[in-house]
Length: 271
Ligand SMILES: [Fe+2]
Ligand SMILES: [Fe+2]
Image (cartoon, rainbow, N blue to C red):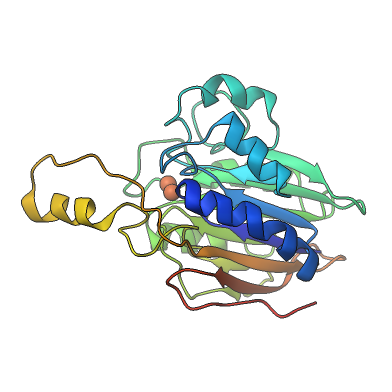
């Protein structure tokens, strides 16, 4: 199987670019499954029902989120009815929505996707390692054909630790949240694909997706400044393509994908 996972979609320009490119990418890269992180899809903050429908319509299978999931409050009443929209699994018990799901693809394989959130330099939240460990024990590879972790976090150390913690048990551990791609795509020692951060789908002539002048002024003046506004220049789509081994469920390869905008292009090998 070949899966595409895209990092945090920031604002309308990025959303439209993803919706435009996913159908072509599905075809040309022979993708079986597409996951995107949508926590910043609604003008940089949160996600709405309409945006979910737009992404599903383009061929996205599952949408993950993170700390910005509730920024658009109406999603709190919508999320329980949408099994394809995930929020971090380690929110307190009773939180609306699901932290993971098991999804089928057209030829038959079952793909488990879990969204977990890190704790270092983030809001206090339940232990993500314990939550992912419980899920790995309940649904080991073999009972599902792929096990994909979107680990949403700030600290590279915590994300790398999650990679090694899941190595040999999960198909892939993929970092999101920092909005800047890292160049450490690799297969870990026991066959799990890993990257610390996919980077955002967004305008890189910005400060992590927000208009640069406003964002810089906040650091320079140290005064409560203008409200951050999403940058709407040409976006770069940032993600990774993972190829799974049909027997073991582990990864055969992971390649960066970058398209458009300010960053150098990167394309995975054609199948
Ligand atoms: Fe984000
Ligand atoms: Fe985030």
